[in-house]
Image (tube, rainbow, N blue to C red; front, side, top):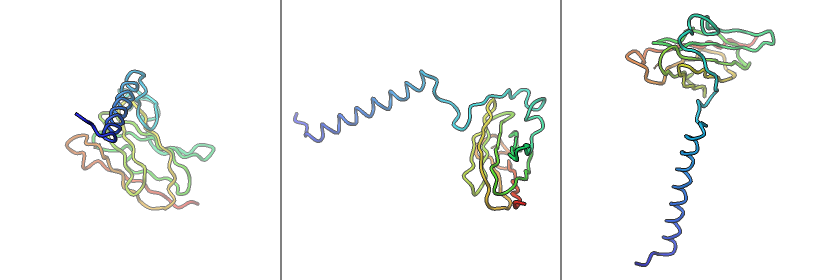
Length: 158
Ligand code: CUA
């Protein structure tokens, strides 16, 4: 059976891509290179509410003016539920989960983190527009998932 020349080229190209992509999956699995996308920092979910940064979550302004928001996501709330941050300055969010995987999405912005127990998800953002921002959980986490909300109040810079 005669195979067209271009047909043959494309068959080889497809085979090469298949080998390449399968190789990438195998290499990732064997080298343990797969990790949570935002930040690789672990935390013990068993002691979250007892000691450490996440036992008393909230907004902390450092001596250098850096703003850090620590937050716990748990059935079916964000702790704290409402946070106030300044506009026009970098704000670092550090979030972890006390139970299952939750989401942390700030509606109308590109801040969107997966929050997994045992890991601290981190992102630094700057809100330029003061106002109220809705936070929603976008990972199905249980019966009251749809009620899991928070609020970020961005206050005008002083
Ligand atoms: Cu938490 Cu859905």
